Image (cartoon, rainbow, N blue to C red; front, top):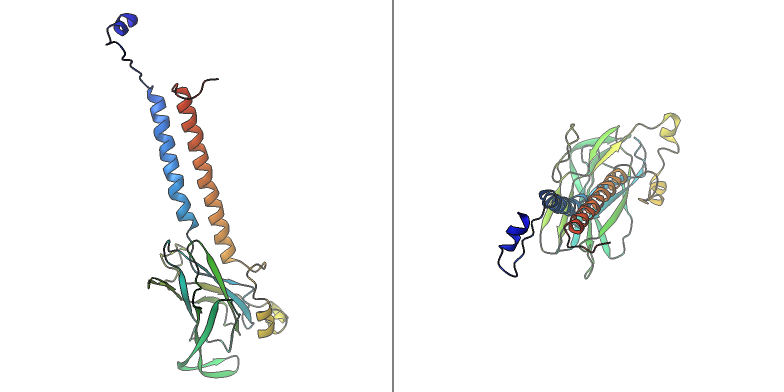
Length: 265
């Protein structure tokens, strides 16, 4: 019967029907590939974050702001970080960055603040890094900017809002607090977690000094906490995306081979 039907077909015409499972396999592979390609840009996305070499109450700390360029077409040409005025820092110093100029702004405080025995009526309220002519953070790149500050306030969370300016005029404000639930907002503000100093170290090694903090302004130290954790998560998710893409490729290759179009053994 099968041969009879075949003989009734017009000359030169053949019929090939792909089994349903093969079609499903190809569709699944295509879906996995699309998912993995979509996942990679998302996991590669990052935000402006602060990294501390150790934030002990009453001590000094080197804070490094890691700034990724998230625009695919424009470069970052300026970054401004706002410092707290309810518990201002007595000491603020910047670390030189080649190709960038750092400036600080001193403002009058809303009301006098007692900071470790010193009454402050004004303090440095922001630090701005501006790219020199011809310099910028290019698409796909990031830069790090460091300051030494202290003494640090009582244990708790200190928000350090940042404003990122691009070469095309776009301005992105990283100023949204992260809620207690831990769900990250669209533009989270960099935040510093200040912890209690350990015993006698409150007045010793843990507290440190402005000189010690400035000398240790290196984001690659073991003190990387928040930034390291987020970078680790990004790498993990990126690896999963690549794995999904590989699985999709293998499934598609097998389906293609079994369909009769691929090379036979």
